[in-house]
Image (cartoon, rainbow, N blue to C red; front, side, top):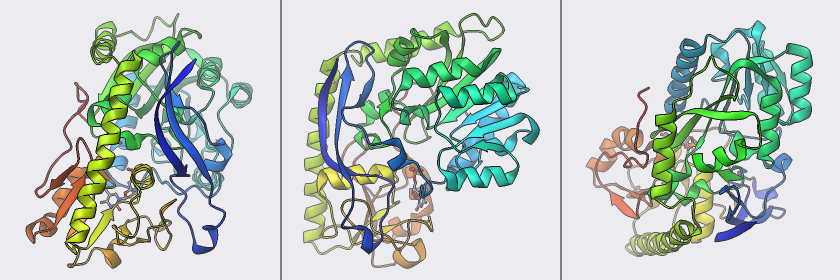
Length: 411
Ligand code: TMP
């Protein structure tokens, strides 16, 4: 049974930036998170239909920032070196930022957002414009055989029926193959109080403990975990193989260290989540009070990065245009639109990053080191950033949000 621990109120689709004429019919749902007492999986209590989130209008480009381009380059290089796979499958290939490092003749992709599936099909990678499920895996099995490397970044946590998603991987993974997936780390989110990792797309937020429990119902097992601090605010890269695969070794020490850390934090018990809920409620109060008091002093406040994460913050903390004038974002598809729920205008960096801006909420706090370094001139002329991670604070010099995970992977 799933037990609720936090209610983040009515929330819109986090990545659906709107035109004026779309405001009236905007969709909202109740964002509540709970802990499954059997598997210890943290998931939404009420979910949004996958096709309402992932369709031909999806705007998030995986290659949209230098950090992510570098990350996918180095990941592809590392996986090629480690496994030299003959056949590769990517689940959730977005705009092809990862898949482009692999041979077109031996690589296939699955991507339900047809605007992106079209891009990778045109690049020459056969892309199934479908959701990942058993039927899709069966089709790939029949048409291309078993796959040696299956990769999914920021995709598994989107899939409602997670057990079925793993069984579909099992169906098409070669005997000596490896499945590598990356998703936001619940432990990092907990340690940083980055509750904005909760939004419609993140149906689940994984601990390794929960993944272990779910995989017990399959013939798959975890064989290694990388904790990557600087990607998406703290990411776990999980390596999975078939239980009888003797070619790929299992790093028991590495897995046990992460499991022990999760246990030490009580992430396998409801008490940790009740404690987290209190921290979330306090963070909301502190952030609203800080922003409102800055606004009272007549300072021009904007937000930096129209992120999905900031949709959760603005809607939960009731932060609208009375506090934030607008959001600056480099993504053309978001510019000229209004933010989901609170309807804050999104403008280009060129238009909005003007000398009269005094404070900027770090909507893209996961790039804090990059942004605060890039904006040294803004900080130098008395500008400041406001962050809620790991606690509500004002940032006046270049900074990096402190590490929540205990081991950083060099990239
Ligand atoms: P992400 O956190 O999901 O990767 O989204 C980051 C968003 O922030 C994306 O819309 C691009 C935007 N952004 C900027 O506008 N300026 C920047 O300097 C960075 C790093 C991101």
